[in-house]
Length: 501
Image (tube, rainbow, N blue to C red; front, side, top):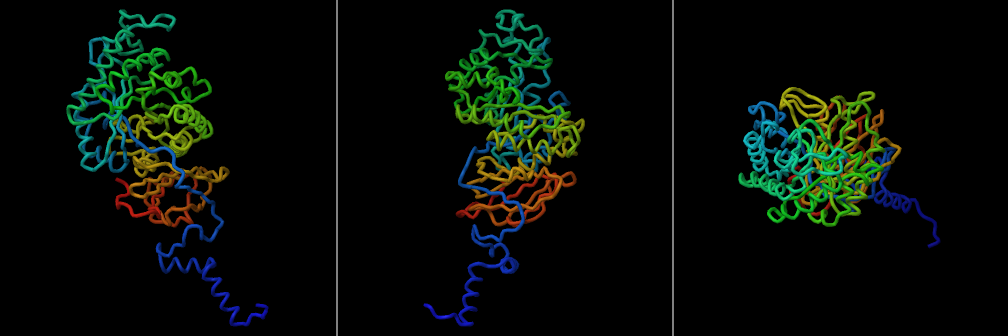
């Protein structure tokens, strides 16, 4: 109180100051001696020159339904003996980490309309994959898509494309377009019910079904054309009939192209028509998109973000339905190639769907083929895995169903794209970071309840989702042109011991 401080008092004050406001050297020494248990409380971190990624675990968005693939170990038109093996099932479930499996519901074969597969060909795959999933405790979502109704339900379309000519069979049967006869909607509903029952009879519950793949495409393989009006009228009749028998089976669609359904002219496409019809929407559960990249032009991150953001606004915000990507491919099997869409571009596409579109499901096209790696599959059987396989694994294996995407803020000029997912049951926080810069960067993760340390998994041109050990949240190195997944326990209350299941 007005008296000058003695030397002893000054030393005492300095010691007190050091206790409450430690220097960088003190922090480092403390951590060396105490490991993770010596981490400081949230908010007390020595600020280095690293980039900050802020994670707000209290602001939650969509719940993740899962990630998946289409089809068997080989394409359905392949040899029946090459469709399934336990090794393949273990690979896609344990390593890749699929939690959604999409399959075609085939119409009956006729002389005019031969088919790649039937139920007897698909049955061993369904039984084997589902059994493996159950043995591993994985709740695998089985989703079905129709490429064409049975030939007996197909009719020709008028020359002007405006009407269905009931009574005039479609010239190519199940192939080459044609339309569902408007007087066969009830028959079509029963055929869908019969298909779900085939799975039910072997103890498998279908999670969701789409009444038509890419409804605007009259292509040489199984296909069926719908206008906006035809698709909506079909849903009005099919939806209530299907739900009356299988109320828990979700109906998804329209499975058309993201660039159209989320583009500037989306009012002319199918999802907008569904959303504008309360009667059709009443029994409709999930909006689904498709997206293909020809490999000649890399996807623009800003374009993808806009397409997904438009979709989120229209279908999540305004209609209250989730969005899935149910078919995508076309990325070449290289990490980064001038003028083409490669594996790193796939990571950015998945990020755009999750972060800008708040998509809750993502399904790649053909999971594997026996003939080799192409831009349409992720694996050659179980013998060879593509770079796109490992990029997908950075998401599939670690972001599990039930996780909620949480708010993340990153410096937009840093070249780093970040998203994070909190799984409440296990108190697991998974963060996916994409460094598009040509330079490696060190980042710091800030935020309440963010783990003090993470397990790190890295994919680069040379690394394949490689486990790199444990890193501190204060100093995470992202190599140039890399995809990095971080998995850690939050500082919240007591949790389960299972992180990935």
